[in-house]
Image (cartoon, rainbow, N blue to C red; front, top):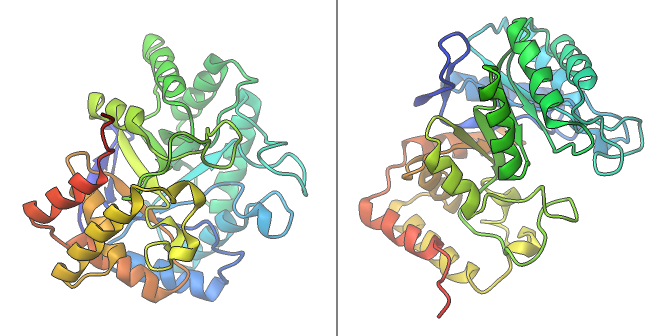
Length: 333
């Protein structure tokens, strides 16, 4: 396993494995025995960066979520896991009531919710401090300053270490970070968005919200990250839910004329390396000029084994150049 530093403050920064494990369906669709086995194998291989959210997986049973955090808490206690395991969680998208969703009825990002939701997450996970806490989705009903100050208070109290943001417009991320910097408060240092080798269409809304606010990384996000090298990008759905081996699962926004050339380049490199297309995607992300932390899910030990093997896959400069050339958007004439 390889590692990288996340965060800049010596009091809160952490060394995390370059491959993160997503626990979204642990304790709900993925049963406890299988979840524990995947977690054990990931940690055995040197992985220490596990991702969840307080609302996972409410959609499986019409609840408000909490399944994943509860399971991780049980796993931590049963394994005697300590500070060596970095657990990231999110708040703001938990449905306010069972049977509702985070599109129509989310808790949001008020100071009150931030404090109460963080406390619930600590209890479920069985930790005194949340290593990394994300603002899960945008909340335009609350002044941004209130959200920034609400998160900063938890850091000052030692209840939270690092702060992150997910699925926000880049301009709102920058505005929040500017507000924090002007007030000498801790700000977002980790960004989490969907990001993969294939590129989605940009002329139609993507993601789960009508305005596309829960979409994939685009050129603006990448430009922002290059301008702010201290930030870390955690890429969720890097394997597009199995689409690289099951084309029938490919989301509609990835079905466009640019996709076949990218898939051809990917499969060519996979043949040359003897690796799977999934492993090539992860290796491409890990070794790029803007390295990211892929966040992989797994519903079996075999799946996490495949992802772990990608950490040691070294692409040649020529292979990377071909993948990059196919990945770039075509210029209009």
